[in-house]
Length: 134
Image 1: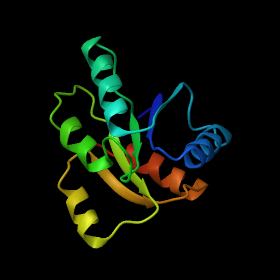
Image 2: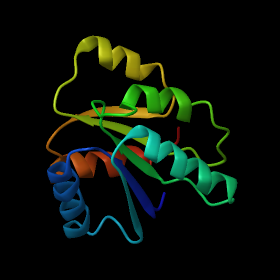
Image 3: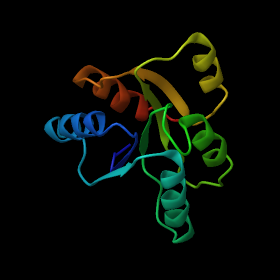
Image 4: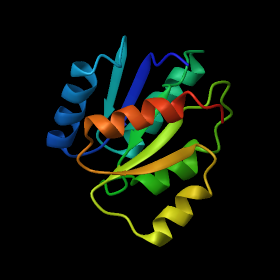
């Protein structure tokens, strides 16, 4: 699987900046990095892309705790979309518990939970998991 587009959905500008730097310095991204500050903004823009026949991102890095629409609310809505190519969703959060991990497993798009801050090893794991078919 080639990774052409990564979508970061996170309201923390420091985490977003760090993730962008990490992605760019590790030469894993050849094309696009989409950034949205909350689930609602992401859902509107990704749905618009879908309506225009544009492909979904290959990977979504999703924070859970955001204003307007949190990560769970985003997943509930995003999961309902009919998608030709299904992105791999990685929940990237500063804290999550066993209940959240179990809840995450109920979404077929969620591949794993990763603790913030994202580091190079996490990125390598994401790339490896993304090459495995869903």
